[in-house]
Image (cartoon, rainbow, N blue to C red; front, top):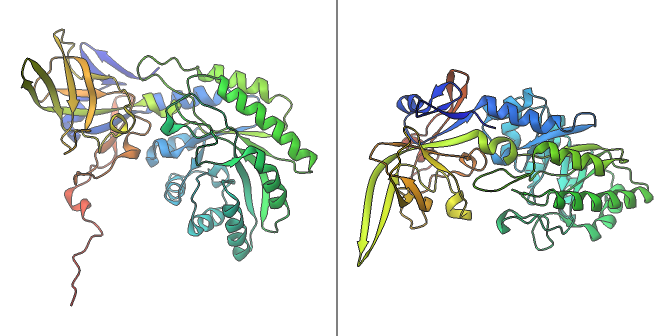
Length: 421
C-alpha cells in the first residue's frame, strides 16, 4: 500500500495535491510519501519480531539523508557500498554499530574510514581485500570486524544485471572456497571474524531462492563451527521485489515467516538488507509535457509525448528496459493512443515508456512516473549538462524540499580552465 491516491480526479500524495507541489518547486522532481516509507519499513521489520535481527536499509537504492534519518529513528541500520554512503549515513545520525559495509572494490581510504567510524561489519568479498583490511587495521592498532560475503551459486530468477549470487557474477567468494579463507582470517592478528554474508540479487518475486540460499548458509555455518569458528551474525541480504507492472512478489510477512522457519536452531543475529521493497513504491517522479508530436513515414505514424524528464533523471527504462506505470496528474481522459514517452536527452535510448497505450495529453500536462523510489534519484546523473532535479517529502498536509534542485552553476563546481604557460 502507498499513499498516492486520486481525489476528485487529481493525484494527491497523502493530503497534498501533487500539482500544488509542482507549482512551487517546478518540474521534474522526485516525491516521497513519509507515511509510506514508515509503513513499509515497519511492515518489513516487524516480520522478524521475536528474533535477534537488524534491518539494514540498502542505501544505494535511495540515499537522501532525510530518508536515512527516518529509518534510523525507526530502529534501522544501513547497508553501504562506498565511503560516500558511509558519510551520508553518519550525517543522517545512523548508529555506526548498525552499519555494514559491502562492495567488491573498497579502497584503503574507505577501509580506514570504516574502521575509524567503528562500524559493525565489513562484508569482505575477496582474499586480497582481507589482506588489505588486516594491514590497514594493523596500521591503526585496531581489529576489523569481518563477515565474508559468500556466493552460493543460486539463481535468483531476476534480470541479469541485478543478479548477484551466481558463480559468473563478480560478487562474493565461491562458497566452496570460503572455508579455507575463514580459517586463514581466524588466525590473523587484526581481523575479528564475526559473520557470514550473502546477497543473491534484486527484485526477486519468489521465496524459493532465499530458502535455498539459507539452507546452504546453514550447512556452511555448521562446517565453520566444526573448525572452532563460531559466528555471531548471518547477513541474508535483501532482494524482495515489488510490483511495477504485473509482478506478484511475496508479501514481506510471508518472506519473514519462511526465513524464520529455516533459521530455527541457528544462534545468530540475522541481518537483512532491504531496499527496493521499502522505498520502491514510496516515490514518484513528476514531469511536465513539453510537446506532443507525430512522425509519419509511408503509411505508418509514430506518436511521441516529449517530457522534461530524461534518462539522466530516471535511467532504469533505458538501462534495464524497466517498466514504470505513468499516469496524468490531473483528470482521467478516456481517449487513448499508442505513444512513446520520451525525454530531451540527445539519445534514441532516452525514453520513459515505449509503445504505451496512454490517454491523450496536452502541452504542460503533468505526468506521474510511479514506483521510482528505488534506484531513481540515486542513479541520476548530469548527462547533457542537466542539473539534477529536486527531491520532496510529504508528511500529512505538509511538504518539504529535502534536496534542492541543482543550478547550472553547480554543474561546473570544481572545474577550472588551466593557465598553461
